Image (spheres, rainbow, N blue to C red):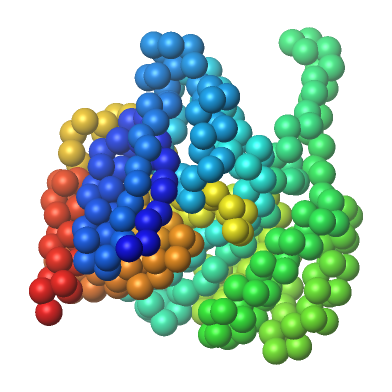
Length: 355
C-alpha cells in the first residue's frame, strides 16, 4: 500500500477548523482508494508566536524538507505585526523551498456561483500559472528619509531568465496535459514595464518547442477585462508574481469566491505546499460557520500532486456534484456548518466504496 507523508499547519483563525474537515476528507479518500497518510501536525501560527515568540524554527523547517507535501489552513492575525507571521511561514516556504510555481485552477462548478450573467461551467475553466519566487515579492526594498516629508520608498522587481523560463515551460506542459484548448496566454505589461521584455522573448523561444500548443498574449489590464467579459477565451495563462496574485483573486470570484478556490505552491518533484486561498477570518473563528470547500479542494490538489490522482479527482467531482445538485448551498460563510460540509463529502466518498 502506497503512503504519502505530509505536514499540516492549521494556522490562525478559521484555519484549524477548515483544516480539520480537509483532513477528515483526506482520511476518507485514503480508506476508499487504498493508500496511507502519515501526518505530522505543526502548531505554527500567530497563537504559537504569542506564546513562544517562535515562528518556524529551523529544526521543524529541516523536517518538512523531507515530506511529500505540506498542507496549510490559513495564516494571519490582526494582533501580530503586519506581515511577520505571513513572511515567517508562507514566504519562508515559498522562497527557501523554491516553490517557483503557484498553481491556481479557476473552475466554475455551478453557474449559480458565478457573478457573470450568462456564464456557466463550460465558460469558466482556466489554469493560471503564477511565477512564485521573483518579481516584486523578492523583498528587495528600502526607505530613505523615513518618517520625513521627503521620504522615498523603493521596491525592485527582479526577473531571471531561469525563473521566467521555468514558469513558462510549466505552463506549456500544463496546456498539453489538460488537452483542452491547448493555448497558453502570456499576461504581462511589457509596453510599460520594459523588464517584461524578458518574458516576451522567453515566451516566444519556449513556444517554438511546443508546436502543438497555440499562444496568445494580453497586457494585464486587458486580461482582467477579458476574464470578466469572455472568460471562455482562456485555457492556461502564465504571468508574473505580482500580476498573478491579482488576476487569480479575480478568477476566484468568477468561480464562486474565496470559499471555493485553492492553490498549490510547487517545486515539481519536491515537497510542495497546498492551501485554500482565503484568509484566516478571525471574526468567524470557533463558530463552525466557515466553509471548508476551498480547504477540501486543496486536498484534491495535494493528492493529484502526490500521485493519488484518482482520489483527487473523486474529491473534486464530489464537490462539483454537491454544488450542482443544490445539496451544498453555496460556499460562503454560514451556508452550512463547517463540520456538516466535511461530513457530506465523506459520505459521498464512502458511497463510492460501497458500490
